[in-house]
Image (cartoon, rainbow, N blue to C red; front, side, top):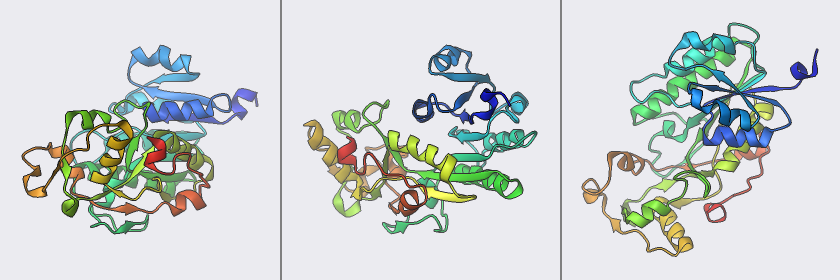
Length: 292
């Protein structure tokens, strides 16, 4: 076959910040393609060496051309913002089954599917107890990906991702929140939070494409073990900014948004043994203090 067909063809679904980091790391080694619903992104993607493919996950008929194109797929597109299911992932997996299947599919899920672990360690086999509709939509997406892997030879991997940060990522550090003086919970009410640097997440996606085991789930987090307030204190000290005020949970509802409160209602310490042993990923930023 011509060389352009022998080379691995990687399709990016959801080519935002992490997708672009994946593309940058793979540039020159594979043929890169990305699904986009915006004609305005065509020039940007081509400039990065990515072939744009017009299509929309909310319009399944536009996904027909994806069938048989890629040998590996990285799916990072989020579910819709409402409802209990993720029809986007279901539409994608159906489209991929129309012709020759990819060898591997990696899906970026969320650590929120574990729910509140009450500060216990969360390993990949832990029972899921989602407490938000956001997390329930992600579980539905995971189920679609796992069904694809069970019903076909596709080697599917699911990455459960906590808070993503990076100094060169839009909103990727606590700096803006520290400047606003947004409070955090007092120590007695605080929760454990987990993190991953955006570059290490992109590298984990690539490792899973080639090294992920079939139907395998991986926690993708660094080695940091900090409560949320301590994380913001650390960031404040690094930036030379005042530490955020501490408030009790009983009054937090009056000062924080519902989104922030939802994150402050779940405490877990994620285990990343599989990430290191099976995917053989050596973190460039093993802790948030090195990453920030």
